[in-house]
Length: 257
Image (tube, rainbow, N blue to C red; front, side, top):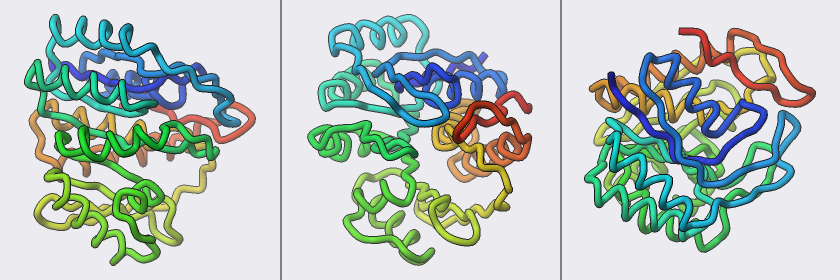
């Protein structure tokens, strides 16, 4: 059985973070493991508070997993501070883990900052260059690229330039753009993934779900474009299922495979 690991924050309401990742892994028939970087107090209405896991205990979690059940692929989500990033990089190198998907989580959908400024610099300089693919949304890609993204041509330029800088593939997600929900992948060539705009406001955890589904594809031997294509189909189906829970932006239905 293929194994996958999520290194991310938790969501007690179950819609995002490691909870969304583990549901996605299970829906794809893979054995999921999780190492928690931060506890959050959040629900469909937003993030109320964040409690980063102490670095020494985080290191024990990650060492325990990697030394016993080496994952076929790793998804990295919320990284609250530079110490957590450095420990992650060090242990992934120690255990020769290279099949890495990094979801560049910087700000929650509700606007809450999930990473301090020093951590952003460490993320760019230490982790992204070791990732096989990263999955920034438009605001995150603007931070990494250093320019505004208004058009699809801007998305292509950002994906290419960031990829050339970090050495891995870049998927710029177009959910924040008006019109189509096209995502642009650059991995030496450009690939465009367009999905329908589904009339469902419940999209809590879409970024976590997409990146973890890409991780599943890579773990099972698909290449990057195939993994992204499969993940997009899964995410679209999870949104189309129309689950309606909570009083705010509700979660997806992950159990649709």
